[in-house]
Length: 167
Image 1 (cartoon, rainbow, N blue to C red):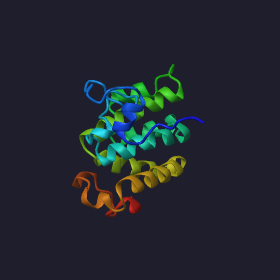
Image 2: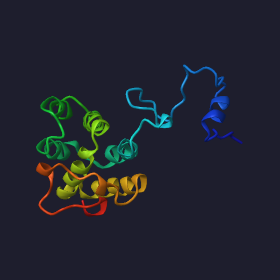
Image 3: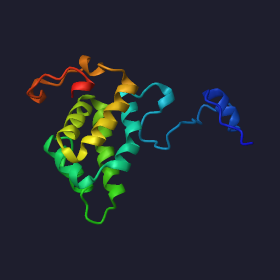
Image 4: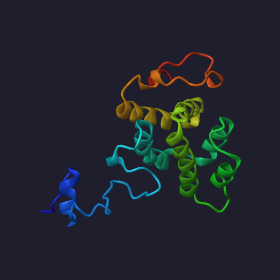
């Protein structure tokens, strides 16, 4: 029988054979070093939800249909757009370029998450992915969380959107 890794961080450190006093060693769920450590509490709800959305993007998004939408909504800079449509890149590399750009924005300010979800919903080809991502967001952040985070006036849609469900 295979021994399962414990959930508790301290127990997991012991499981891995690392002494807890070795403060320079951190065990995290993510292999990415550029982003905040989930256990440290530095990650916002938007970032945490977005991290869970990565696989949905990798599984279900065609970068050629997503890039124009995000670029038109100013969620990608011209440089990021070029990287995301680079002719020699694989689809996976293009999606990763999009995710990196979006995650950087979400780490600064959560508004792009709202705009991104609205952009996904507005494109029929991306609608199913948008619904899956909204479901993850609702589960992670609690329904109605976006009510406390209104969009700046210039970015507000024609009809007022009050929560995740009516994005």
